[in-house]
Image 1 (spheres, rainbow, N blue to C red):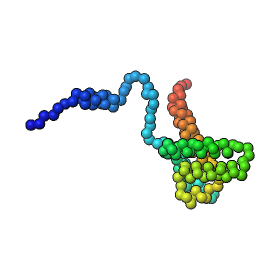
Image 2: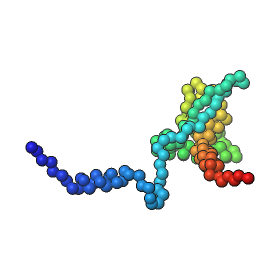
Image 3: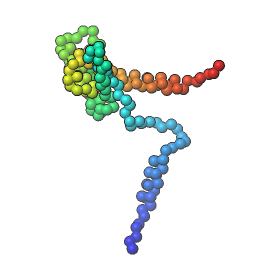
Image 4: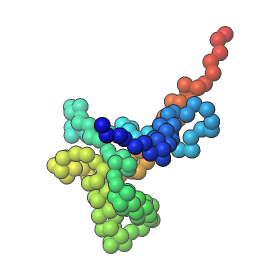
Length: 156
């Protein structure tokens, strides 16, 4: 019959790992709280004529992109804002604004190419700005909802 040797260090490591896996009930609040699920994406409803109920398309969230794409989108967003808010654009700056707008738009709107091609620059800019500001708007809406849940009520 074979005997199995027990390594006390492995047992100690297993106990430590088991203790770490248990949820803590007492003590300070966590330094970081992570939600691994993605919130609902913002949407855009596109109506092609007055009688059309429209089709809904989603706009991606920044966290859906890898870190390199997030960096590129952030840089593009900064450049877009700078050019957009410029009082006057040179011809070259105008071309650059269009290039940055189209690049960001193509990355963030989830829609078929034939749908994207139908949209004018103003609509594209609205989509890009929605992508840029959506996390802040969604967070503010959530905070407002949380605060309304916490408001005390009085009965008279």
